[in-house]
Length: 208
Image (cartoon, rainbow, N blue to C red; front, side):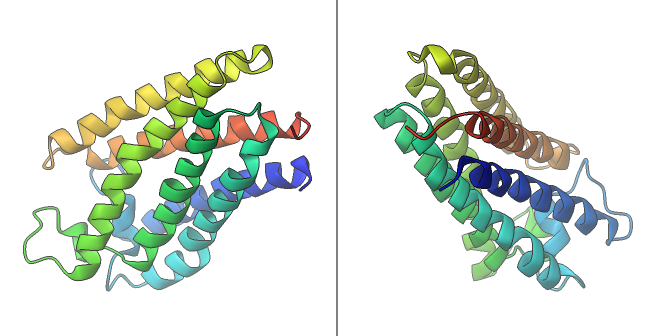
């Protein structure tokens, strides 16, 4: 597949995910981006939840899957790199789809009191996403460490992965924190920055 097409797939996924997340918050009165999760914008029984899931989060997840599964071919062959890209496709791409198909309860049930099956699946998938996507990014970084043409990208990937782990620890360390929404958005931003940088790298690289 043409490297420019893969570039546009990645960038479009980022734009769609970001736009949906922002619009979802604007549609809810008194919604706080610092204390409330992104998932609360499309939770069960929210007025525009189904629209946000079907038109935004699910398509963006599909684009992330396509970008990750096709993108690794534009980098030097490495088991770490391949596993890392497939990890991002499975856990960030498919993970984004799964949490949209199984939305959380209203308010995302932070106390986890009598949760619905959808909430349980949503939480388990979110845990996998925030645990394994940073590791996948770091694996790509180490996989490309010996490639002179990708040394800067390697360092960037490792740095973004480590930073995201730090904020994941902050996110899960205090479920009652007033900054849960902020921590989550920083984590998502780090993932999206990696995709953007990777997309531009692929744009300027021939398939290997």
